Image (cartoon, rainbow, N blue to C red; front, side, top):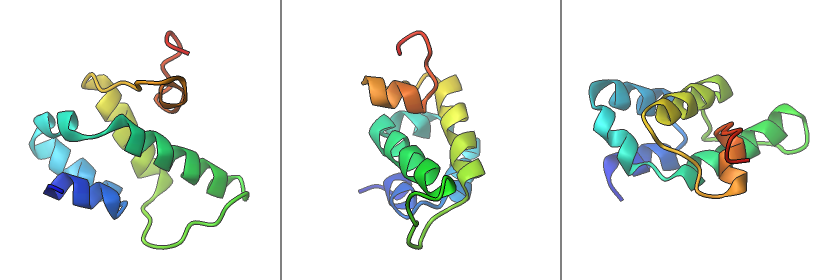
Length: 91
């Protein structure tokens, strides 16, 4: 794993945002699957269906990260991922 993968694995979205603000090329190293899965989990937790076990970051930071990645050209590769990225044209 590289550093950005470790930060994502630990769900430190604020740190991922910080690293991406320094180097937009890091977006290309992010797996859409990871962000889509985490968005799904966080949405379940927000709806009270599932409990998140620490470590976990803030949902709003994850959503901000997904939006930045989407604006930098990262897209979902499947229907569930496209749903997480709100790619209405692909859904």
